[in-house]
Image (cartoon, rainbow, N blue to C red; front, side, top):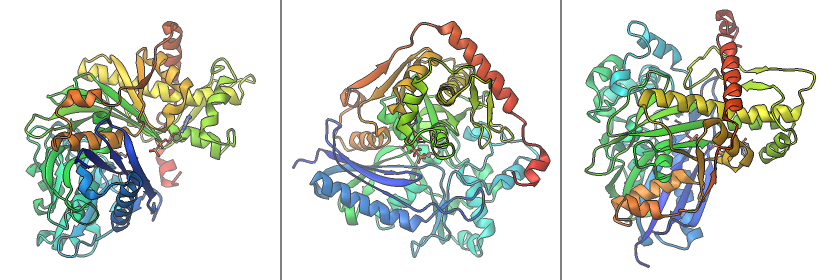
Length: 504
Ligand SMILES: Nc1ncnc2c1ncn2[C@@H]1O[C@H](COP(=O)(O)OP(=O)(O)O)[C@@H](O)[C@H]1O
Ligand SMILES: O=P(O)(O)OC[C@H](O)CO
């Protein structure tokens, strides 16, 4: 078989999958396996990086088997991954010095508060596009240096390496030959200057992180090297953080293009072109992608903590529905939300508020309210939260959204998709292949390896999609959005200092 197939490895927070694509963007075979979520203390989340590497090899073998192909049939492999999650390992033995600290892990919150003490949370924002927060990798590296016995000394001697999951997988796939990351993953560390695309020495000094730990930063689509083992001889030709890969897989190549991924939480990314746009409205500035030899494309990102998790909450805590898909019928059993508004600040509010002291709020209750209204309020909360982020993006970038491309588990919900189109007053577009993250990694790798000639060829792949257009009634919906905003203000500041002390 001619080498026209491309594999993608999608290393996510809960599972790792591998998919094999043909030149038309069709899936020929796939495999997926979960890994263990380790919760040593409240707020701490870890992964076993060695287990993830083992799972990766299993799913690659499984996907090749399912597709009926051998490594020699692949023109390239692209890597995409959960972002920010931090691994430090021994250069000689390849053994991690500690479990990986996962992006959700909040153990570095006090460290971030200390680093922010004199200069504020935006101390490194102009260089990195990010606020000081436990979400990002830099503080996680610092925690490992400070808390795992011997690690700082070994790091100072140059014996240890740091990587996000892209770096860890590429290092293992090449038998330890390559210690590289891509610009999108590096842009989530709080250590990279967005303009120079290099590690920022002043920040490394301030965080006391030795440069020798850090990988070389490369474009997202470029032949980095050749794999051994399970992908023997296959060029590794792309790496992208998973949300950026979804942006690429959704063909959001032009300034003003935007995608939103709806899973447990939601991540909206807006392509802002070749200049990083600083945010004054609670968004993150990040690298969208960089093709070999080309200038980087930047993005504004809005991260929302709770969207699909609300569906799970109604299912698992209240038994209102037996499966996630049933929420749509329950919501359709009533004509509107009956005056109910739900602010899902279960772990505070992320973009655009970043209010850790907010807690969830259900308001507008009357004797009339029933389970159907609650289901509506839960789905509408996702649409309103999206509108908050989209409005912030317009204020920061001056770009008005032409349409919103969507993906993720929640997009199976037609009522939600229509509500989203109505609340945003833009067309909502869902592609046929829902695995846009893997598609993006395959597209980027295939582009670097010459399977596809240019971005236009990628746009032509998999053009079948479903669209929802806004229905009339904008004024009424604006009033409802204002109500939701009012509820958000009521939810903020709910936690008092002594609540935190009691650990509530
Ligand atoms: N039809 C639906 N309506 C609303 N929410 C849904 C629906 N189907 C799945 N979900 C929610 O979407 C999430 C799963 O989506 P997925 O993209 O697999 O998420 P993740 O990658 O975060 O695990 C779950 O939180 C689930 O409750
Ligand atoms: O692995 P996911 O899909 O939960 O995505 C995680 C994000 O990259 C975190 O920033």
